[in-house]
Length: 495
Image (tube, rainbow, N blue to C red; front, side, top):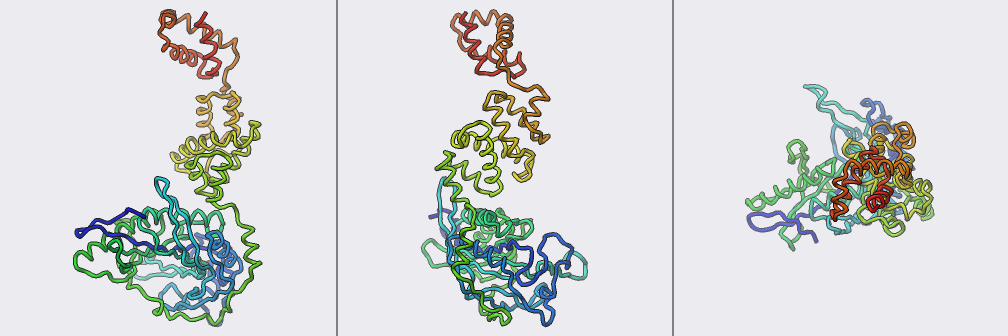
């Protein structure tokens, strides 16, 4: 149970949260037409006669969108309904040319499921899913093109959406943020949505109510089209606090829809919230029920990739990677794919089994690579270092060609140039020196220059050993093999 509470003048209040996530289905064509779906096209250049609601135009279901919705339901351990139906949801707005939206009301393609989230301090929670239904998106009203007129871009009109509706199971902004992150991760693993919240291909309607702990559910308000995890959390905090202040001030919460203003970090009223009967739902007469068999479902189940929870468990169980590292590496599909490619190559180059190199490889990726990419403002898909080059670098460090310090120097050069580490080592003469003859000479010179400290060391001041190691490394330009230096120095000082 969450201990998150809003502290009011009359005591503590519990927040109840449900999310309706609209995820754009990965498809080259729209839900009921062949028009393109690519992001960023010029306004009204990806609009068919169906999308524009021209008279006599009939919708035809896009089979790929159906497949993607079923795959998403399977990934969320949800009930797949082999019989579903499309309905008309009637409302009127300038960017909805039909005067209704084709959606699914009473009979969605996917029923109840669940999503497991991980919270701070190792806490976990299961959030129930009520349904996933397919529907078409509306167009976009453009209010910044003219001081006198609003324009409408219908490129998004008819784009396929999955509306993923949670149960009101979340009790804090942290839980809601973890839910959106995990859902986005699964959609991207499955490939049913690219999860790009900045481009609007995934956005959340946030339903928030407050109550005294143990009381019945309060009146909820909806915050529409929130397009980042941070804004989801901020909208919840603001809305919950506002509701508590209204109730404690003697007011009444009105069920309504609000918009979130990220600039001011506050919400403003959009319209009173409609109930289902206000939309006058009825079955779409132009579309027959959507029917498929169990064989269709099982074929799609067999095609599913390894999902993040299963991959996390495998990393910990089979590869000996820490729970934290496994969580970081599996959060995004691209990061997991990059790591697995690098790990396989590392094992091959070092002639060792995966289990012997996995822990060190995961530490390097998370600490060194991810830290550097964060500083550069890049993510793994933009990394200047390929999995192949990373594996080569770790092999050079593993076989003693590079010391740890030289490895970091080569890593920095790789970040700047994207070059193969072997090429960098060869061209810049960065190989670690393990030749005992050369190191004996360097050690002799260091000891000769510091005869007084040699005498102190032999008199019992053994802490000076680190000084001699440092001077030897300095004399060799940091290229000396530290292990060999230690062995040779001990022998020289004992003589």
